[in-house]
Length: 127
Image (cartoon, rainbow, N blue to C red; front, side):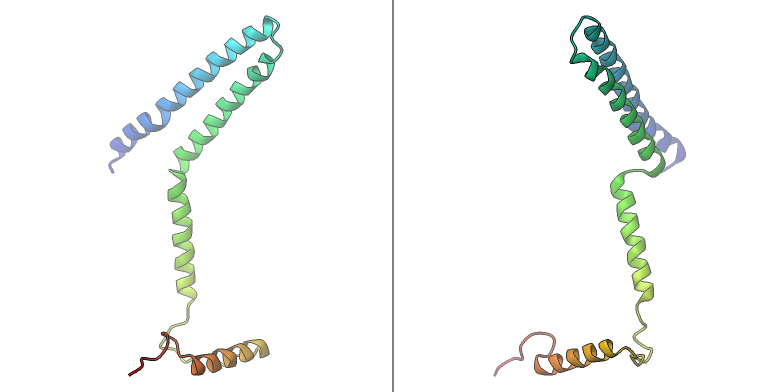
């Protein structure tokens, strides 16, 4: 996507909603403050609640502005992690290394025995 299209998209999808939310939070704060001045004690809670919601909106806006959507960053993290694991896998052309850990030796022997008794791929075909 070209840079001007991305800026236009960011303007409409990030900046305009932020301005609307912050405007609404400021308006709600003023209303609740005036209600609190009239003697409604519960309004003091809302007087402080709306600025906190506005701060949260700025945090979310900044996160999306820097990193994009949360699903993109999560999927990128797992794709990178899968690539690291694929790079760590042994090359099938290389000979298998000889295990030195007694538990690993016992495990490999157990797996070999199980595969002899029940070969992988399901039960054998019957005639």
